[in-house]
Length: 119
Length: 111
Image (cartoon, rainbow over all chains, first blue to last red; front, side, top):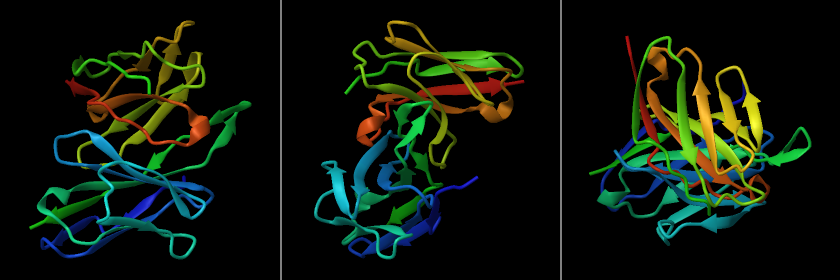
């Protein structure tokens, strides 16, 4: 069964450093997402990406964040200058709007996550 | 965006059927209901999605009444490995938009 993969599984960085989190979405999917989950809290939406551009972003996704699909298979989230409060699990998801018995569905499939720890 | 309400937690014994109900009173015509499962430190895992009546797959059933203002996820014969948080989400799949997670239902299965 195809799945979303993410690397690294755990990233430790110093405050102020740049990090890049990588995701390989399911191969025929066209819509890509990043979410994060601070320990003990809800899963929060960060950004969605389609056709090589951001389609929606949350207020969390400020100028410190950027996304890219550099080579047609990877989907990356860059945090330019990490803060302590960026420590969280970051999940990538992908979807393909498809047809389920004649009805449009959009199931998002999530990766295993990257645990980011900012010291 | 339709708001969902589900119990904070539930307990069950292994082998029992578990039903988790979610209410979504202001569900829109184009909205579907989707359930995800999440284990600690893992990504949410898609369980089942439906629009109306009943949907069944190899892991669960989803019951949606005619008014669609609520839905029930049914897990047959749970095992210890079903201990997880279960999220009910409502949204329009045609827009490929963000998922909004609530706090979910924490299911604890014991022997």
